[in-house]
Length: 489
Image (tube, rainbow, N blue to C red; front, side, top):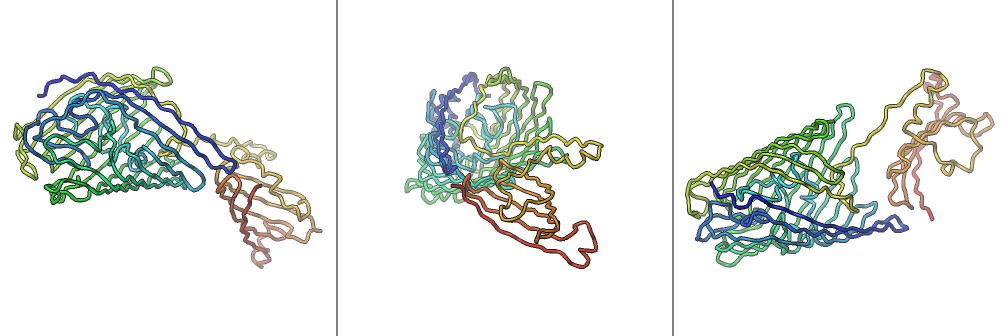
């Protein structure tokens, strides 16, 4: 069992953001975050040589995982890095970001819930044991400079793409530019990643379902003596989560070829369950990974309970068990100091986490749950038509037609008045003197592209008596379709 010489780890960060909304409705802004982190000296940024399988030979390093065996360890001390520094523009057509930032594959990812903020299985930030090899975090390039575009969330679905010319930033959580002694140096270039995220609230079942699918690929620059062994690195991931009133459950799966032409695949998956009990959140999670390149196979299971002690701080107590197996040989015959070995480490976790404050341009990965009170309908006939006022609003007077006589009676509702989508339903009753149908029902929808420009459509049905079935049977009905656009000066 490895020596437990790195048990107290820590991270701290500070961020700033600013934004401005132009008269056109376009939002522009910038965000930045710097972090100071003390991780396990051999496993900073997840990459490196796991504890107990160091060596003095030569080996290969995975382009996605950054893991290697049988080579000298590359120790690092406390590190500091600018993890986020980007500008953005956001409007009705989506959001565009430029600068140091996570790619859309990591930003949109869904998966196993956890009570741990820093030690969550599959996305563990600090590694007390140096044994962790389970990652489902789909982050190929780390916080390197990139250009990202994300669509608006429509009907619960959002998609995005990121382009990174060169992964040359040694991120604290994902060190994509770390080259280990004894391993061939690698450089990730021309990376492209795409992701789609969907979130749906099923009110009748009382559950929100979320899921994400992502893919990434990049070129690998290597020295000539290993160019025949490496190829493009390609990674896929899928994750899903179900959130009930007090219970959340989810899973994530990731697979990567590690940039190796043959025999270098890495595969990992995690599952997790959390439950709220009063002011406490309890949870259990499990993760497993297998790396053909290094011959490593590892797993981790964790139990924990957390409680918010203040609005911006959380205390977590947990227990974790990490296991690591090393096969006698791997795809390239790289040997470690010890062949066919199994390592294990149990850890008690005590963590105090500062919760992030709200910031501008924060990702909208999962659509927020919408709360709506059940309408209370009065038993009196005078109030039976008033129930809709619980969730609708009167149609603005500015939308009424000015070229026709004032209707005798009018029933009008408008939904989503402050949202991008607006739905309206109208019933108009006119006098016998009007040349228009005596009764007319109208239904329409409007989509606000910007605060000043909108498009929409409307269908209408009119006749002398809408409730008279004989009118419909004789087809004495006027129908119409109207398309409209509006621009406010």
